[in-house]
Image (cartoon, rainbow, N blue to C red):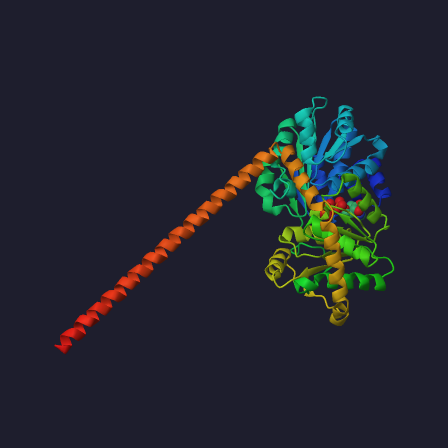
Length: 479
Ligand SMILES: Nc1ncnc2c1ncn2[C@@H]1O[C@H](COP(=O)(O)OP(=O)(O)OP(=O)(O)O)[C@@H](O)[C@H]1O
């Protein structure tokens, strides 16, 4: 027996997978499915696009079919879009079971979600913040009987990035039973291995792909050294070239902030490129709509912040452009992993300014590959430079006239309230802290000034003494 049947999966499930093009197990699936079926906890670390999702979805479905009840499995994931994608995999692979799933993410109606949770779905796929909110406020559902807890992109869930999940995870871990199977997956698990081990205590099985290079072989990785102020002209030139040279093309551009994402999108539209933005300051419905239109190739360019860096599986993406060099190698690995998935080829180009060279070295060291330089026709870039810079400035002015920054402030306040903080109190605290810092600085400056004055005085006295001594000596000589 070979394939998925050989790993211990039932015929109906192997057949269902086959129908969806999942015929032969990938290495992470071959390694992790048998121990999961044996009841062990599992930590799986494999490259982007290597099929980690099916590595947990398939054994969970098999176990569910043997003893179906709700709520059987809880999957946590860092982003809302990813939650929908995972739910889709459960739905299509679990169709013969009549699987009931439920997605619990922020930005969607909480009452409707509470109702769905009370109907005991087999699988709940959630982002930690919204699920913790439900646990804090509702008694209409229980996670006390779950068999599986899955943490997809587990390292992201545990790290304390700009969205810190720690408090929400504490609430969730307090609500799930100790006797459960815990499955942890990511392309970058190793940094947080110790924290992860404390979560998976049931004879955890750890599997990591053996390849030294951390990115896939099918991915061509290039960098382009550009001065900061001509970055956008290079970007426009790159896109224009892909558009001219390829019939069927699709690009993701990653950028550092929501504001830059918005400006780049406005700017590319000025050049008639079919682009769409995805960032956390958009309403959730707009986020889903943008992604759906990109997936269906209505828009060929997706400009996104790191909200889209992990997990998204869009097979048509051929190129990833990093408009900024990622500050962490781990983020680079996930971003470029949006292309060259499941054996396909892809290209990643990172725009690097003179200030980012150390970041490229750190990336190269982590991924164990040297990035090669990408060559472009400099003259063509210079030819559009003024036009692009003017377009960008116009977009910046246009955005400044909207309430974009104000919205950001409102969102910040909302986030604080959700975290149980009082935004006004926090602002007061911040102001007080700034005052104390200012006072300390002034005090330090005064001390410095006094010391300087003292030193100068000492020097002056020394010089006066020396002069007097010299005067006495000359007077003596004259006598
Ligand atoms: N055994 C298989 N054979 C062929 N295709 C597969 C197989 N398993 C999964 N796939 C496909 O490979 C693609 C990538 O899978 P998946 O999204 O699970 O990757 P991943 O390892 O989770 O990546 P990332 O780290 O980026 O989240 C999906 O389109 C999936 O349907």
